Length: 400
Ligand SMILES: [Mg+2]
Image (tube, rainbow, N blue to C red; front, top):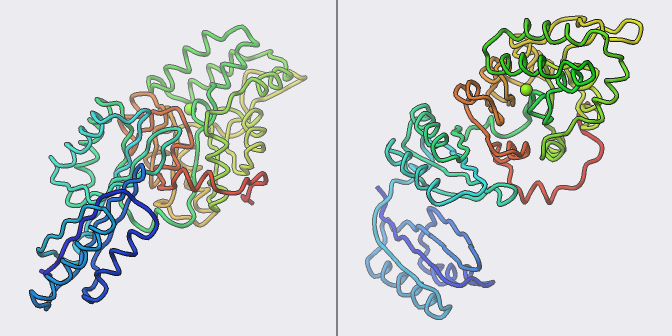
């Protein structure tokens, strides 16, 4: 254990406050073990931990008087507490808990903090990652087991309505990653097959099968065959109309632009159709697409698909193949999806995110996001809103 002095300063901030306080302590020569500073609404909170190992009590008293007199001159509160600390212990077995809400209320945060404390965890640090379009906080937690905490926080998430993620602050969070996204009801707000079905007057029948398939009640491949069969006879021009009606999910452009700026790879893996997904991918600068293909003969849909069926298993395989092609290990992959056919892909990825998902998916994924903004995924990756906004516009995608 190391002998320490903990100096805590609070008060109105202005340029030079930190400098003046540190200058007052400089003659002591005590090594700085830790320092954290934050300014909220113009008010400074500064914590400074100094090692006083081997120092005389006169030297400690002199340093204490010096910083207290500097604080008095600056008009800030100063508390100096002697004690001991285990140097380096702070970074052992840390977890990062991301908390998101719109709004994020004290009751939700109380539930989160309570669950962490009950699992023996301590919140060492809190940083705000975003204030818009959601409030997102990153909590650094020590002393808790990841699986145990994840389970406890999943209950908090469903009861309090905040989005929560528990991750290890390992190197996999840094450097290039592969982000694989589902399309229908994830990247876009629509289910494309239902938009096509409107042209065949079988919207209700198709929607019914879609709902059962996405909830995991029926096999996806079979449901695809059933639904595509209902589209027989739809003129191919209808697909142009469908493309015009597709609505991107809020935040989709920001997410793709930012990931490209970071040099990340993006892939779209869809149980929908190339005919509609490809133009969306082009618009977003995404070059990797895997989807089903509709068979067209004499200008009309035949009610069949051609080529391999992209179902639940094929989505997971696609994630692996894209990762392999880019030589990105699976623990550096992120998968985002909402339906039961995304479950294998979410499980296979390093971070699986259930995005405004069906309950069966939400319950099984690492992380569930229920705020309706796709760019909130960036906050889970630890990318602060301010840095996203400060980034240069990037009209041409960096993917190749
Ligand atoms: Mg979907």
